[in-house]
Structure formats: C-alpha cells, structure tokens
Length: 112
Image (cartoon, rainbow, N blue to C red; front, side, top):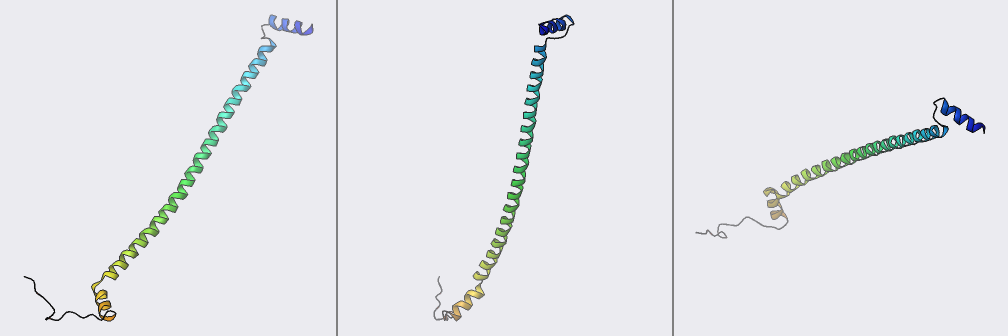
C-alpha cells in the first residue's frame, strides 16, 4: 500500500517510475561494459601488434647477421678458388707431385 502511494506520488510529481530508473541504470551499465570490453580488446590488440613488431625486429636482425656470415664465407671461398686455380700452383703440383715436365720441341705438333 505504501509503495502504491509512493509510485502515485512520483507520477503526480512528474518523476519517472522506479522501474524505468532501474532500466536506465541497467542500460547504462550495459553500455559501460561494452565500452570496457572494447577498450580492453583494443589494448590487447595493440599489445599483440607490438609483440609481433618486436619479434620481427629480432628475426630481421638474426637474418641480417646470417646474411653477413654467408657473404664473408662466399668472399673467402672466391679467394680460395682463385688461389687454387692459379697457374703457378697448378704448375708446381704438376712438377712436384706428378713429375711432369714441359713438352720438348720434338713432342710438339704444329697444326695447320
């Protein structure tokens, strides 16, 4: 009975009924929860992006270092190949290890 009187008094005074204030509070709470979830989702996405960026930076650095090592190895192999192909070295190996000598004039044939 007292509640009916209060509701009637609120309506007469131009105040909204108590049920609508609960609904408004519920709607406001729902909006805040949605905004909070969106904000947290955005923060998690930003953190994930930063972690990926850092990881890619480390991978790039590692790949650049591996590339530098490969280039040094390639350079040393090119130098070694040039040393192994040198005519002086091949001539020395032919004379010392295989006991070869340059051909004499009689062994040479001139082709027309």
